[in-house]
Image (tube, rainbow, N blue to C red; front, side, top):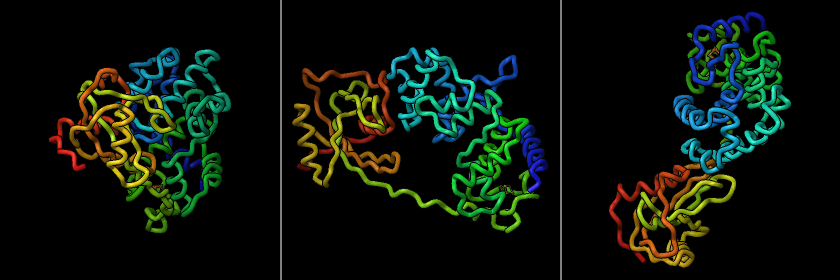
Amino acid sequence: MNVPALRAALTGWFADRGRDLPWRLTGEDGRRDPYRVWVAEVLLQQTQVVRGRVYFERFVEAFPTVQALAAAPQEAVLKAWEGCGYYARARNLHRAAAAMAQEGIPTTYEGWLALPGVGPYTAAAVSSLAFGEGRAVLDGNVRRVLSRLYAVSQPTDAWAQGVADTLLDPARPGAWNEAVMDLGATVCIPKSPRCGGCPLSTQCLAFATGEPGRYPAPKVRAAVKEVRGVALLIGSAKTPYLEQRTGALLGGLWGLPLEEMPDTDEQAALARLQARLGVVAQGRLGTVQHTMTHRQLNVSVYRAAARPGLPLTTAAGRPLSRLDHKMLALENESAVQPLLF
Ligand code: SF4
């Protein structure tokens, strides 16, 4: 591999074709704002760029600085994160902002890595993009590009990180990292790589095989677990009774009272929910399906009248998961069906 030629080809391509994204703006000093870089990198880890762009603008408008984020209540942070999923990331952003408001924004990879919720990828991205530190990022896009460049079908993380470190352009580590990520996102795409427009094709070993899409071999996906549950819409979709969720996935968000169904006995689950809340279901609104971190949720939603002692809340004022938005939408989408039991 001719590394200097590879670097020149890719950084040249990036200068012409790199994506124009809001977190790539530089200040008058030519530097990136580390806060915006950090927020964008965390947000984009599980979100496509088109949607991520909208979420990013909304988030930095609500919290333009690390101090503003640190000073906000957690509920406001979750509200601004609404729709992005993976809410642990928002809770960690908030905790890390509190640490930075006290101790200042780190300027090194090690300093970023010490913050809550910041792993090697984010630390490498912020330290290279905002501070010019020579750290190579490794995400899914980079891994795919390297696997193809060397025609390695099952690249381990250690191998991919080693190659990324070797290829990193020490003169422009931030531009190099973004160039590899952009190439993976726009040219060296998963199913049908666009090798005709790729600046690396003359050196790419997978391209030379004639079947670059075979690299890397597909990963074995974790099995999706089916989770069934019953929920109650008490009041109306605009002003329902809501409970604050706990747990790693949705902790801190609000949602309809929900009872998990460890067996298939929907009647028993509904009876437990009614007994806990002191209400009686009047009808069935429908079923909602939602996929969330290797779980397929199937929730039957029932409706019940409000009663004194259960406070109703304006739903729009609370952070809600997409699952809860779908459940609330049933009020307008479907007629109430009679109870079957
Ligand atoms: S030549 Fe094709 S397979 Fe190789 S890096 Fe470029 S787009 Fe990917």
